[in-house]
Length: 177
Image 1 (cartoon, rainbow, N blue to C red):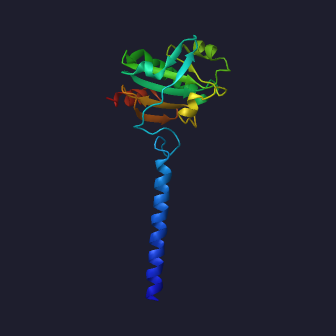
Image 2: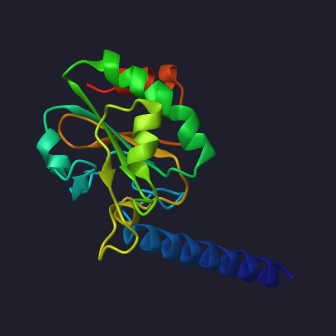
């Protein structure tokens, strides 16, 4: 009887070690992802190049040395619409040290009319699902709005998956060095 108990404990220990090692190996393959599938806090933000509504090309690397609030949104998304006025207020008060980039993921809709109707003055890069490598896929966007807070060195310092208030934006930007 004692031998069976010892054998069972040893077998259970081996199974536990095997499971832990398998999970560790799986997570090593996804070092840039967090538990929700998005990019990890502390990872380098992937650079991208997109055209804005006025046809200018912008790259994330253009803003190195500034704090960046990188938001992903769509014109049909109610929580996105809800946070836009606060994003505009934040942009107006933020100063030159902070950049607001709101990447639109549905440029086939009338984004220009949305921007004009809502008095938006921050930069709106356009990302398309028909593009070869959409930026929202590189950033692992599963739900919108999603906002990444990127420090002056291009490191992701926080991520919010939901609509934010002005206070949320201020708190996240102010928490970065």
